[in-house]
Length: 110
Image 1 (cartoon, helix red, strand yellow):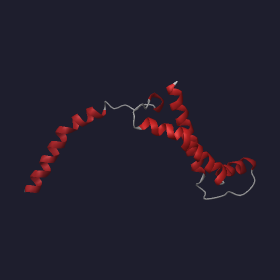
Image 2 (cartoon, helix red, strand yellow; image 1 turned 90 degrees about the horizontal axis):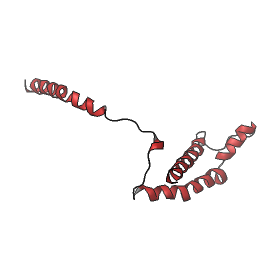
Image 3 (cartoon, one colour; image 1 turned 45 degrees about the horizontal axis):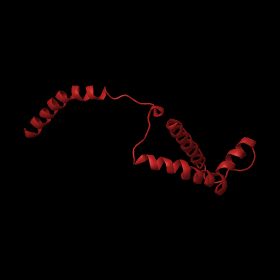
Image 4 (tube, helix red, strand yellow; image 1 turned 90 degrees about the vertical axis):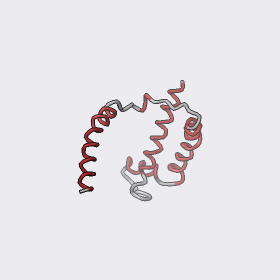
């Protein structure tokens, strides 16, 4: 009997709270990343490090130390064999993404 009473109480409680939860969710709207500017003391230095050091290291790694960029050249020329693991190309995409975000951040500061 106790379990049934508790179950019924939880149903009534969830029904009573549901309209409040729904209304608070309606106040949340997506924001395009291009409308966001990070200026706080914690993240700004980290973004600066990514822009000035990390991206260069990633480009060097994907271009000179692995075959990841060469794989794209081979695909464009339709010659040669793919080097490395088949999903290695995603690292190149991540570097391009980091470059794009860093450029967006730099342009927002101007």
